[in-house]
Image 1: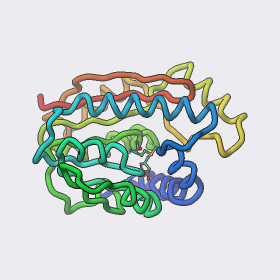
Image 2 (image 1 turned 90 degrees about the vertical axis):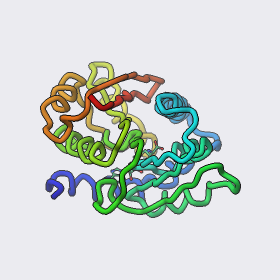
Image 3 (image 1 turned 45 degrees about the horizontal axis):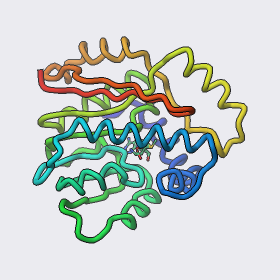
Image 4 (image 1 turned 135 degrees about the vertical axis):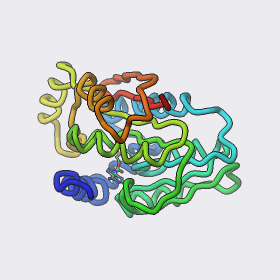
Length: 232
Ligand SMILES: C[S@@+](CC[C@H](N)C(=O)[O-])C[C@H]1O[C@@H](n2cnc3c(N)ncnc32)[C@H](O)[C@@H]1O
């Protein structure tokens, strides 16, 4: 049973991505020109996506992958280009509709897009679970519950990102409040890496997993850190 704070946050996130920021998000995740601030975010996100994909096997033929909080489906699409059988889920019907429009013919793999909660019961097991910049919107306890829930569906590897709590990032968030609303990112909850690691170590649901690679990416107004969980 998801906590009330998770449910409350989830509905704020859904409203933000499905309505307030849907057009801006579609544009950010396309090739269309964007402002200088957003261009740094796009560059950082491209690097993050490449990092996560780089931690997966290059040949994903026949492998099942869950893209949890897929947005407009950029990572799902790349995974399917490598042959993966992708289940990509997001809270926002608007972003999922946009993701469906972006799927070209003749992909080596396949993608099933779905609207819903990434923790909704009833999905299969996956070889790989990837969640890029989706857990960054939850408080630590809820973020840990999400990571444990996703790990419960993964056979081999779980890859996710978090917003690292650093002094520079705290200052950047404060400066971000000075920009026009259209240029602000959605509320992100910075998490100290040490707290996250100790939470993962203490979570009974994550007993079979340990932290593998991690990589922080900072480009202008984008800062996010990738973390890998592997079987211990
Ligand atoms: C910052 S966007 C990242 C989208 C995508 N992963 C990418 O990197 O392009 C965060 C996404 O996570 C989705 N999200 C957040 N919480 C979710 C949940 N509990 N279940 C499904 N999607 C969720 C949001 O709707 C939003 O589209």
